[in-house]
Image (cartoon, rainbow over all chains, first blue to last red; front, side, top):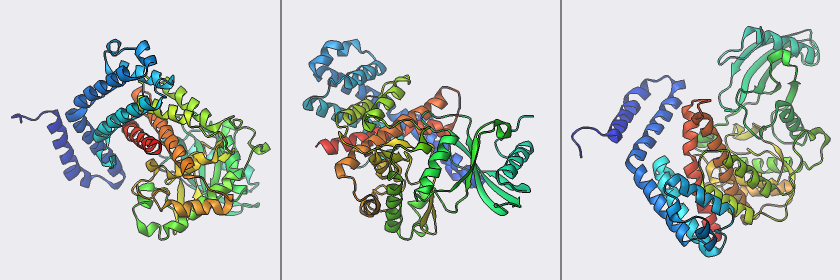
Length: 132
Length: 348
């Protein structure tokens, strides 16, 4: 805990003020906009807290998938040649489209890792949408 | 001065131009617009509530109509007003519960863009209300039964139809055509989406080998039909209609992403699946299998994700800065999550 507010605390506090004090004072036709702003602030606050961990974990998972993935993938792109997440996503996406994860074992591993990452991202965008 | 529609009120010049055109269309001695207000909703089309007073001719009397015009930003794959008017005519004539299309205007001297007039129906479309306020839907099973039967009446329209020759021809394989179309949308974006690519590859590998081709709506879901006194008064928003696999509409209607406040009610967040399928079967004579529904629900999530990415792009590119578009981009995470969950469950 820091003495002064960090970005996440500023956004969270501003959002509370919006919801408790501004929203009730808004005319009915502006209420939806007020709720959208509150939602955007909530996402930004969660992303500030969780975003960098989520991206680091996603990159590690994609590297795993690439190195464990089919021989075709390993020969065309190694983990070392994909330094950042954007490039990793692009490499995996192209390999998926080319059918390099079609065998059952690769597919199972891939979908499990993609699903974990998707759940992490939903925990930022809309945690209410997660379900057992 | 060119006649235009501005953001809130219809310019007097536009109103006068429409009145002149309506008088000719209805062969009346006079046509007067007594109210013209923009309707909410419809991120793509521009809809106006139009009240008209017609004197003389077959249309003599008071009318509650909707004017539907092209909006400024065009979405790929959506129909022109003339195509949509033709689709709506065929659907309406086939017994589909939908607003009756009345007059089409392609004369650019009237509004500077194409538009048509259709009857204005009573009711509420808002999905978040219909799925949360039981008073609006006292008999949910009956509502989804009627929606199922209604959809089957649309799917009874089969190619070729001369009135619909302006539509794209039926695809050789609807599922594979969808996969190819969504991939080319993804290829126009800056980032790559492994989860969506995985879903599309799965849909490609599991594409049904046999299928019917029918007139499908492509946005038949809660939020796009009006409910009045508990019953559907009409299906709206026909701009994505075309020839396709009827199961695409069934997957779209039942997909989790269109259930609003009723995620556990598979028929559009309104009711369980069974009465919906029973209604469909009562007209079509058959119903989709569970595997069919699973497949087209996966496709529904992928399609919505691709559309959401395009909307996010409209905002991000700076062309149309909008909080609503920005937030639409953030639902892609949920759509990927649902598509992957569905695939995992099916493959397990």
